[in-house]
Image (cartoon, rainbow, N blue to C red):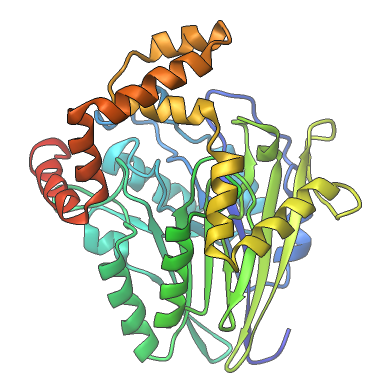
Length: 386
């Protein structure tokens, strides 16, 4: 590492649900070889760690995961020293959950960023001065039931206006800016074009590097105008395995000097037999590396990216799920169709309902039009999210 430079190591979601199996103490020991000579070691603390049982009423109970304290022990042992808290589970157990999580992490020597009791506190970035380089880490999350607003605390939101203002402020002070975004389509290896455009905008505004996680799948990366953008670091470690891709983990090293930013990706997979994360190569898992290359190729072509999202991600079962939610249909009936291997019939019925029902056409307009969403946001914050 150069004398006047800062080295950053970053990983994705550490999501250890307190009600499921735990890991061996050395599950993340391989990470030490990457963190031992780094200045800032970042990961996402996916679930709040708290004894509180008072959860947000807006979120379904089975989605209000609570983190196990082992996640902090594993992170500390692996050499992590900065936990990002802005994610879709930040507000699972309200401000008490945030306070407890912060206290546990800070007492362990791990700094925090991305959440607070107020919107102002949540947006507050983490500043550093290392080897004469001023650096700041900003952490934002997509809005679900999790973000801070005028009524309560929570995660720092992905809000292009607020985020851009903050980026420009620190850029004008000659800070190197690391932006960590909790964004991405669940269990999809491709970023949406909206996410690509947003990340590139933040780069144009002055970001030095941008890191994304949330989809629980490792995605591709690009070097956009000398700004590394990682579109999905995947899981760091999790005991919630929805599909085999959840076993893969992405990481990256970023070395920043006054004039140059160098970066390198790393890829891992959890070995169930040994109970450890292991570094992997293209020889070990050729299909995984081919998929990463495919995603990176799609980042150069808007039409190609959209094509692969439609063909590889948007399956009939996913369409059915969203159609059912959107039309407020009975999800139990959908599951019956699925068990009977009749999802095509259900799919055709739902497509017809989506297209022909005039009420649904009005819903589409409210969802697609940003002006209508602004009004919905006002109503949501006034009457519901309080």
